[in-house]
Length: 77
Image (cartoon, rainbow, N blue to C red; front, side, top):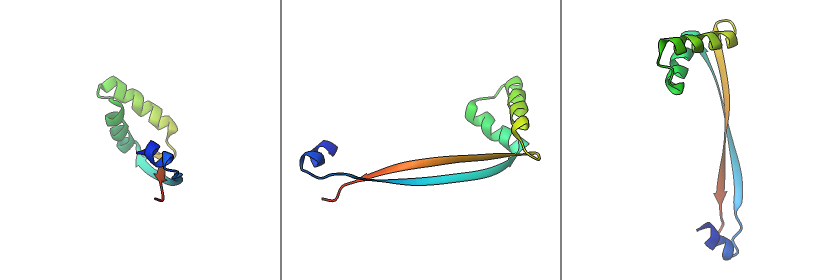
């Protein structure tokens, strides 16, 4: 479809949509959340994860931020 539109002389327009998410978790919530995501089901690995997250925690909370950018390609035909 993209090649067909290109060959017909229709040039694409690209728009970027940026979405930022910021969240705070208690240390226990963060360990539970990330243990499931990263497969830390064994008690020793869970303790290691808790140690890493507690080193990154500020005032007992783990603060996370992530950015998602989506590109939307469209053609005016």
